View 1 (cartoon, one colour):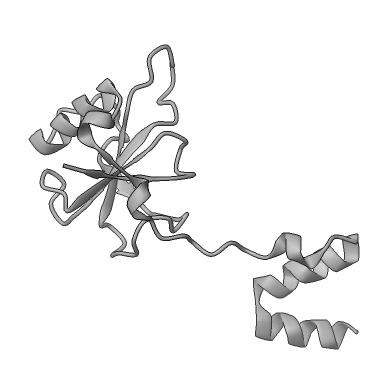
View 2 (cartoon, one colour; view 1 turned 120 degrees about the vertical axis):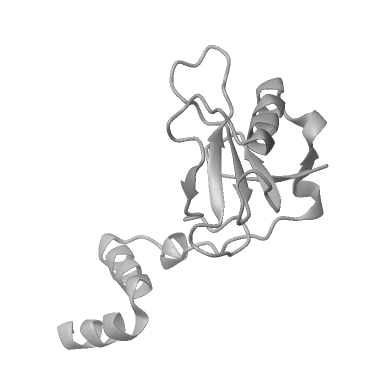
Length: 138
């Protein structure tokens, strides 16, 4: 059996490992299948006016090139969730949208893509720390 499992692991990669763990623990293999990233639809857009006031202020700062309050503002966003369109490694940058009453950076962000940070090609808003995005349209 080990040889059979190794052959499947070698050919199937991490998915096979998940299926093996699920079968050994009695779970359904349907529960461990990875979700494919979903493309943003037209319904996943919002205007700048629909952003919270702090988001509108951050958009102004982005186009001005700063100054930004948080050290992490303007750092490269890797798009690990693969919810944004695929791009070069350093294409996206993230910015904090302040949450009133929150002492930390909170969950709200604007992520912009482009070769020049002060003139982004596209920006996206997330209110749930990268679990979902809405494209910001003018």
